[in-house]
Each structure stands twice: as structure tokens, then as C-alpha cells.
Length: 383
Ligand SMILES: NC(=O)c1ccc[n+]([C@@H]2O[C@H](COP(=O)([O-])OP(=O)(O)OC[C@H]3O[C@@H](n4cnc5c(N)ncnc54)[C@H](O)[C@@H]3O)[C@@H](O)[C@H]2O)c1
Ligand SMILES: [Fe+2]
Image 1 (cartoon, protein in one colour):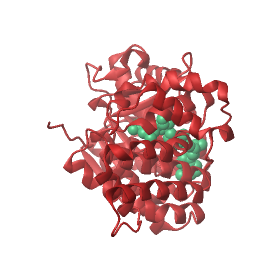
Image 2 (cartoon, protein in one colour):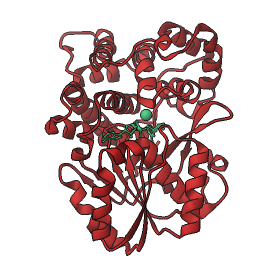
Image 3 (cartoon, protein in one colour):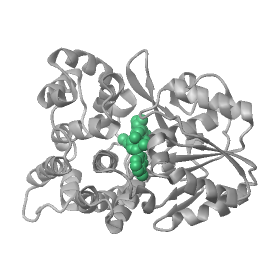
């Protein structure tokens, strides 16, 4: 089966990428720009830097910095209304996945109308949105290159994804210098999220030869640099490998999708407000251990890309080395390894299982069929 392969129209990737922002703003001939970001990014002073670049591109800029972490559908609905009412003709999303997801979704919602809740599913927007430029300040979600946006649905206490090719930004600017101020906790959680994107998309049923190239390189780059980036945030070389790795992982995720790690992680974000990266990190090794037999050859390649000694090993032994490598990496960057540590109790397992089972878009892309019983047993094992 042949799948479409999509990317933003223009990508600037690497040190100095931000220098291209003003030129890109000029090309849009936009006169009224909304810069969407959050308080943490603002405290690091990056909104001013970006604002200056946009103004050099000849546009007037307003800043909206009220984006909450792991944003809800209400946030998107209100930002879209604000965009519509004020006639912005270019949106710039600056931050981690939270501000970038809000920027791309509110850009499309502002044109199509209604609530973002009306568009849960695949390709449901009839019209293109206001153009967007996305600028990540974490090396993690890859949202700058994906056609997904993820929001918390407060009433149901779950997170759901909106998927549309119209969510792709027109321009992605990935400059590792913008991640230097990321604290170790954020670097660790977002970095492991990126690694999950690479491993899940590489072993996904929708993986292709084309996505495999991006995924494997992402696994190499992130595995060799995440410990340094967490331990010494000022190491620009490590930050650059993380930024490029998370972007490559995003390219692979955008085109091959992810699987059961994300499916089982979403309910943790929705109900227990555990950050997306930490939720994924908790379920990463347990789900991988379950998945290995679904594609021993590919998991063996994951182990090799993570620097494990696979020579002379059987595919099964090599594949299990990947699970070991992930356990060590998650522990080394200081992320909790049990659900209890993030507030989950025995009696919550039923809710988690029922919620995860509903993530059919992700579960049907997983390399091994996962039943309700399997989901429950993985949660129990991780408790
Ligand atoms: N669209 C996609 O394809 C996709 C993929 C994965 C995750 N997501 C979503 O993205 C969201 C999570 O994004 P995230 O993990 O990047 O975290 P985030 O955007 O919520 O940011 C986490 C924290 O880090 C701070 N921060 C960000 N950059 C900083 C910097 N350079 N210096 C100092 N502080 C900084 C923020 O202020 C915030 O407090 C979730 O809602 C998740 O579901 C989307
Ligand atoms: Fe993710």
C-alpha cells in the first residue's frame, strides 16, 4: 500500500534557523500577526526575540501568551474566536507542543468555524486555515511537522487528536538555540517523547522505507545526545542533535503514525494531568516489551541504533536489548518508572483501560494486536 508523504512547504533546520523568520514573514505579505506562546517561553525571553524578527518582516504583532500546558479544547475555541474577530492573517506558534498545537488548530478553526470538538477524526476540515509558522522551543513533540493536534477534553477526562493535512504549517523553523533554556525536567520528558515517536513510527504498521530513514536517524541522534542535553543544557551540540532528532521523529510520526505507547499514555494526561512526555516514558518499555514479538527484526534495529551490542545475538535477544536500553535511558534522565509515583492507584486501572481501548486510530497501527486484557496487564505491570 502506498501512503502520502507530507512535510511543511519550507523547513529551516539547525543553528541560525531563526534568522530566516523575517524573510518568511515578508513573503506572506502579512500585516497583522498573532504570536501564540506560553508564560514559560515568555519568561525565557523568547517572545521578544521572535517579535523583533516578525516586525523586521514588516508586520504588526500581538502576543497571546495564555496557553496552558496540555491545552484543552476550550483554549483552542477561544483563541480561534480571537483570531477571527481581530482579522489576523498569519499565526506564529512559539513553544513546545502546547502553543504549537493551539496555533495550528486555531488557524484552521478560525476559518471553518464551530468548536474544535466538531473535528475529532481524520480530514474533517473543509477549508484551509490562516497560514502558520511554527517554531519549537522544546526538542520533543515534532508538532512543527505533523498534521496532528492533541487536546484535553475536560468532560471526558481524556486527550484526543485532530488529524488534517491543513494542520501542517506553511513554514517550520527549528533552531536548537531556542531550546538552551529548557530546564532538565522538560528536556528529559520532551526528549523521551521524541524517542517514542521515532520507535513507534519505525515499528508501526504504516511505516514505509521513506519514514524508516527518518525514524532510525532520529533514534540514533536522540539516544546519543539526550543524557548530555539533560545534564548540561548549555551544550549546543547536544541540543542540536536533539532538535534535529525530534524533527526527524516528527517527520516519521507525521507519515507513519504512532501506536500503543501513545494510546496507553493519553488517559494519564487526560485524567491525572501527567505531562505528555512523562506519560509516554512510563509506558515506553512495558509496551515495547509486549510489542517486540510483533517485529523482532525491527526492534533489533532499534537496539542497534541505540548503541546496543547486537552482534552475534539472535533477533529475539537483540530486540530485547532495545527494551533494556529504553529502561536505562528513561532512568538516566530521571523520569519516574511507576504509575503510583504519578498518583495512579489500583482502582484507576479500569478507567485507564477503558479509555486506552478507545484509541483505535493508534491501536490499529501497533505492530502487535493489543486486547483489552493486554492493556490492563500492561497498566498493572507498570503500577
Ligand atoms: N501535534 C503533535 O503531533 C503532538 C505530538 C506529541 C505531543 N503533542 C502535544 O504537545 C503537548 C506537550 O508539548 P511539550 O511536551 O513540548 O510541552 P509544553 O509545550 O507543554 O511545554 C512544557 C513546559 O516547558 C516550558 N518550555 C518550553 N520551552 C521552553 C524553553 N525553551 N525554555 C524554558 N521553558 C520552556 C513551557 O513553558 C511549559 O511550561 C501535549 O499537549 C501533547 O499532547 C502534540
Ligand atoms: Fe508524543
